[in-house]
Length: 279
Image (tube, rainbow, N blue to C red):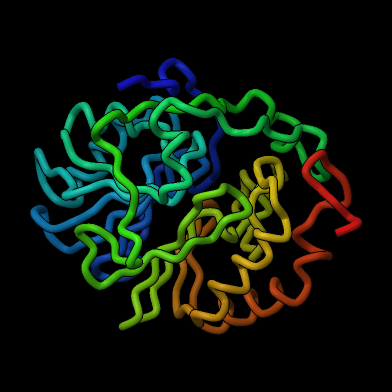
């Protein structure tokens, strides 16, 4: 294995950093600096970790897991919504510690096996200070070797028997959201987020705003729009997104409806190197 995130600590924090929220009895969201990870499950011997937070955060995440499930707890598997640095920051360290399998969409595997780097973040994109800072964000691939596998093509999620994965490209080619039909719970990754992630002020304050994916790393805006339509059509009752606070009920329903309707106006930036206003 190779850890491209080693020594890549980034001093970015929100007001919610270090805060955990029990969204449902078996769905726990924890904010690691600026990004959310999820623990799905209700006991020490039956839970899964979704995403692995920021670089150099493994010790903190282990403490969070042990506070919730007890000393020496480890997940049955790690599921990655996609492979961007803020979702895979601790993955190599955690796999070394636990020896568990990691699952991601097959289109993310080049970024998780050392074969391909992500496109450079767009520091010119319309937005705020976080967008301007984005060229410093790491894009090199980690290499998980034999520990990473593609999610099953039938939509099932290993060790999450009631959940299905939904391909939601645009922000990343193999991004997925996770959905459970029985209570319509959604783990959205960065398909959409609940904070304006380009604005440093809004990232710091976590002001609730259902918005499109982070602009500085989104390379296919038409695919991103279709992905938002896809998750909105699931009619989720509650959603945990990669960035921002969990949201549910009428606020989620109306926010997603508005985002689908106004995506071109509110989500797609006016300018940027990945923006094609002549589509």
